Length: 355
Ligand SMILES: NC(=O)c1ccc[n+]([C@@H]2O[C@H](COP(=O)([O-])OP(=O)(O)OC[C@H]3O[C@@H](n4cnc5c(N)ncnc54)[C@H](O)[C@@H]3O)[C@@H](O)[C@H]2O)c1
Image (cartoon, rainbow, N blue to C red):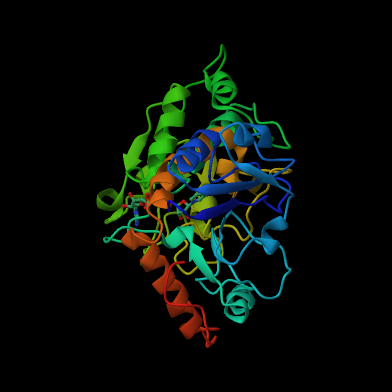
């Protein structure tokens, strides 16, 4: 990426305090010869002055639209609805490759302008493993919120915090009863995060991954007080919890935290609820007797913006330094083209190079 122009944009979603590039990594990029522009952003967890101090140029929020065409624009979440034609290469989570609503419209904007989406979810190694992800902190938060709720200490609305403050609230206090817990998908990124948070809460979770759910012991699952689901299902498997399990009087399970949050998907392993929960109202009561409460928040890492940004940026920065060289970027571009083809969107003349 040396001799390149990179543009870190402001996030349009006002609750999004994370950033894909933190100031320490901005310094690495600048030192490597990248011309880095950082948009001012009122909610970003790091002030723009911290980027300026390491040599980045500061720009107005949303001004990437008038960046020179060769600029690579980096963000995390959705773009604003305008302009209709996107001329740049954009690196962000497009959420446009799994038939999501608005996918064709977004890819059509790139095709119309000759730009391209390099989707962070598809920035993978040759085995298809994600190279930069927020999973660890999603699992950490998913488990932490479950513990706090289980102990009657979860307050709404949820607000972004720091790990030290969060860990302080997780420490068992006088009167806190022991509980049993289960992490499913325990060997993955979010599974590791969930185990770490449960450890900070003084719990020793049962850990299940693929091998342990092959012949699912649902009775054993329901015998835990608290469960954190962290699986990334790629093929349909029998549901872990069914509607009839909610009515089972012998069920011990009281708190269910679904980090995976695959609500509505055919791969959903927890088809016992039909909507995700939110920061304003994070807990949904699924059954009164015996009680069962659900937490299913789909933007968990945003609750620890500093830590999650720092880890993500550490993974992304070496790849940005190898932009156009590392094969992962070419995989991203191929994926974009495949999706345009699949959706019948004509390649709007974007060039064959990763400019
Ligand atoms: N809620 C949020 O804010 C949030 C944020 C980030 C990621 N996620 C989601 O969390 C999920 C996990 O992400 P990750 O980064 O940890 O993925 P990962 O690939 O690192 O880990 C997934 C784990 O699930 C295991 N697994 C798959 N199928 C299983 C099964 N049938 N039984 C038991 N284990 C199984 C895998 O072996 C792997 O260890 C994804 O669906 C992801 O989209 C949610």
